[in-house]
Length: 142
Image (cartoon, rainbow, N blue to C red; front, side):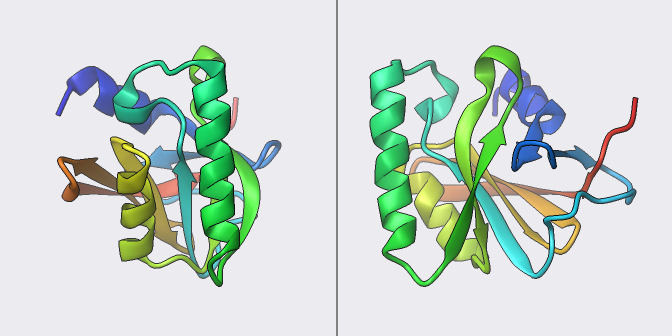
């Protein structure tokens, strides 16, 4: 795994606008949204490489259609920061295998999956899950 990509994922904000959480190795004050099982998945910038705006918009529309065709409800969300802020979905009730399958379908390097405030950064490569880093999703102050 590329260390620059890992650092970007670990340092990114995740979740709905105005309620973004960050990954922490220790518990803290969580945002309001993490309850039950959930996943945050994007279809933008496969493999951590920059895709065109048009390709990203089409991929996001395809992800949205796929999730809407399932039994899961979703909320618009954002992954990342600044120029790497990506449209994503917070998918309520998602199972780990489903989050990984969606990420793999769209060529993602990782997805975020959790239960309550406990989060797992699930690494994907070559059509399979290649690792998991356990964290907490917390609100950053300051």
